[in-house]
Length: 471
Length: 72
Image 1 (spheres, rainbow over the protein chains, first blue to last red):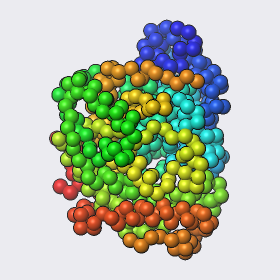
Image 2: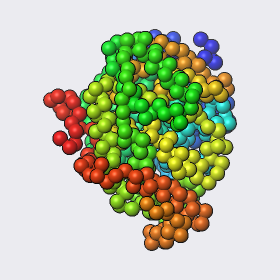
Image 3: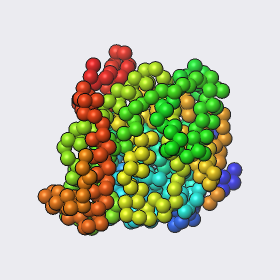
Image 4: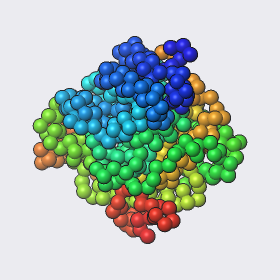
C-alpha cells in the first residue's frame, strides 16, 4: 500500500493490517502527521498537534502488538480529539482566548479510555468557541470544509469533522449538545454519533450544557464509529449521569441487516418550505434503499418538534450563561462577538421561559418515546441544507443565529438531545453544489447498536463512504 | 407577546451586571425576543400536565430493559 493511501484507510481496515503485522502504527501515525503538516494551515482542523507524544504512543503500540499483546481495533489507531476534552499537560483551549493558558493537570477519563484501548492521540481539534456554535472570529483559525474551503464545516465540532473527512486522522471525537457532532458530520460527509445521554462520561470536558452534553465519535465508516464508541463508553464514578448498563460489543451486531425493521418518518422534518430539494431527494433515496433491504417505513408525527429549536436555546444557553457568568463579566472582551452576544442573551432569559421550555421538552420527550414504541428508529434529514459558505454563516452580526431561521434549522438536531436519545448521521449523497448530505437516524435510549446496524446496512448498499474530498 | 426592545435589553442587562453595546443589545433583543415569542406561542394549557423532568438521563428498568416515562 502506498503512503498516500494510508490516510483514508478505515479504522477497521487499518486495525486488520496492524494486527496482522502488515502495517506499523508508527508508519500510520507518521502518515497522518505529514498530512497534518501539509494541510492544517489551509483547513485549521487542529489547534494543537501532539506529534512527539503521538509517535511515542505509536512506538509503544507497535512494541506491544509485536509482543502479542493486541488490545483490540483501536490499538495503534491515530485519532484527534475536540479541544474541550481535558488532556494532562496539553492546552485545552475550548477554542477560546479565555482559556488560552488552560493546561489541565489531569486527563478526561475519555482520554484515559483511548489510551487503554491503545489509540494514538494526534492532537486537539478546533471548534466553535466553547462548543457554543456560531463563532465569527475563531481565535485558532477559521475551520474550513475539506470539500470546499469556502464553506463552513459546521459546528461546534468543526475540526473533528475536517480532520476525519480530510484524512488528518483515522477518527475523531466531538461533542454534541444540540447537533455539534451530527451537523459537522453532515457538512463534511462523515458518520457522526450522538450517544444516549449518560452513555459516555462528561467529566473533565468543558461543558456547554450540563443537561444535554454528550461526547461521541466522528468517522469515515459506521463500523469505525462503533469501534470508537465502545472504546469510550461506560459508567464513570466522576459523572453521576453515566449509566451502569453494560457496553455492548457494537461491531458484533452490526451486520444484522434491516429486514423487518420499522422506520417512522416524522412529517414535520420533510416540509418542502424548509428542506432543500436536493437534501430531501437524497433522504428519500436513502429510505428507499433501506426499504429495498427489507425495512418498512411510514409517516408519523412529532408535533412538538417544530418548536424544539426555541426549547433547546432556552435550555442549553442558560446552562452556558451560568457556566460563563464570572468570565462574561470580568473578561467579556476575550469572547468572540457572537459567543458573547449569545451568552448575554441567555443571561437575561426570564424564569417562566426556562420552566416552560422544560415542560415543552417533557412533552416532546413523551412524543418521541411513543413513536419509538411503534418504530425501531426514526429517519429524517440531519439538517435542511448542505454546508453554507463561511461568508454567509459568519459575515454579519449574529452570523448563523439570526432569529427565526436559526430556530427553524435547529428543529432537526434538537429533538434527540432534548429527549436524551441517541442519533447518528450517515452520508447519503451530495448537493447540487457538490457538498455532502447526511441522513439522521434516531433510536431508543442505549440502543446505539440498532443505529449502527441500520447505518451499516445502508452504507454496505451504497458507496458514499468511499468518496473523499480532493485536497 | 410584546416585542422586546433594545432599550429593555439594556435596562435588564444593567441590572444583571452586563454592559452590551447598542449593536449587541439590538441582536439580543431580536434573538431573545424570538425565543420568548416561540415559547409563548405554545398554549400554557397544552403543557400544564408535563412537569419538568426530574432526571435528564433516560431511566432504563433493569428488569424490563425498557425506558420508563417520568410521568408514570
